[in-house]
Length: 169
Image (cartoon, rainbow, N blue to C red; front, top):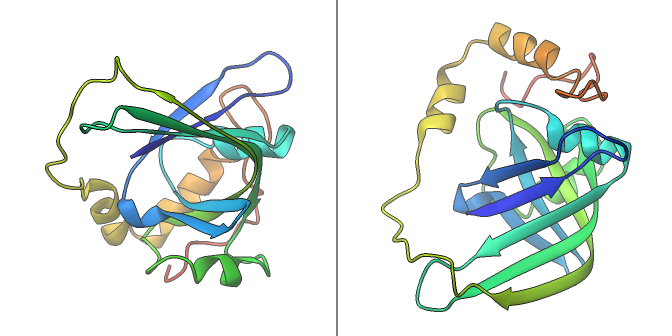
């Protein structure tokens, strides 16, 4: 589990999103990471990246080792129809249903800190709900999602109206 934080350049709301599925984050090289962005409740991260590119990714240790790791950088959205997507996709085992894009981050700063106040948690299992939902969704559900994802909650541009459907849809 990791968290992604972004914010618009002016006003608006800060977005902080938890991310799951252990196979959706990858280190591409010494200064670049990426994660798979799945259709979900909104398009805030994409809208903020289009606005200013600023992004922070945070990992927390919930086990014996009490550490927090933050990756500060500049992110960009790599859509399935972008030429770069095929190269980025090779770093992931297989695409998840409902794949919207890959978020690629050029890491500018890495910082670690203690996580002394972070509680202990044990992973029981991954929650398969989002993958299951997308696997059974008909193609028209993605048309509706694309329409909802054209603007952020603050009115910033999100997905382009001509964004392609996820692979296999």
